Amino acid sequence: MTKPKQIALYIVVAAVALAAGFLGRSVFVGGNGNALTAEAAQKGAAAIFATSLPDLENKPQAMSQWRGKVLVVNFWATWCAPCRKEIPEFVQMQKTLGGQGLLFVGIALDQPVKVAAFAKEMGINYPVLVGGWETLELAKGLGNAQSVLPFTVVFDKSGNISATHLGGLNQTQLDAMVKPLL
Image (tube, rainbow, N blue to C red; front, side, top):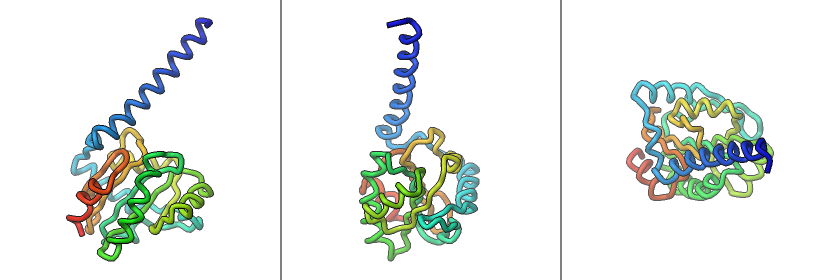
């Protein structure tokens, strides 16, 4: 192997290792690396409720319309394996707890056609909005400095951030975050 090819290989391996480290940290540490100061949490909450994103029919939806509910905002993508794993639990939880004031809102960072097909396939029963890569800036303001997917933020009925989580969630974790707020 030539010297330039060897150097390029080392760079690629280092980049993959770094990405795996960030992902592994978010999955195995349990999402604890995303703590927000009170001021940052207020700014992040204000930013999300000031946001409007297109839904699957390309109609703008203001996040502020859902203030007053226990709101679970999940940033995800169709190509993200942990995202695909947690969404059926979100669908079930929306079905069982939606009548008590719980609402999931998915913000997909993907192509609208792929998101619509995936939402139909999974039977997603909550609003799905489509954001571009610029939406990751919104997620950063909510505590996702590493731009990890999935990323979930739970808001109480007053619109305050109650919890954030980097990486996939399971039913037990989600219950602990949401049920005390209902």
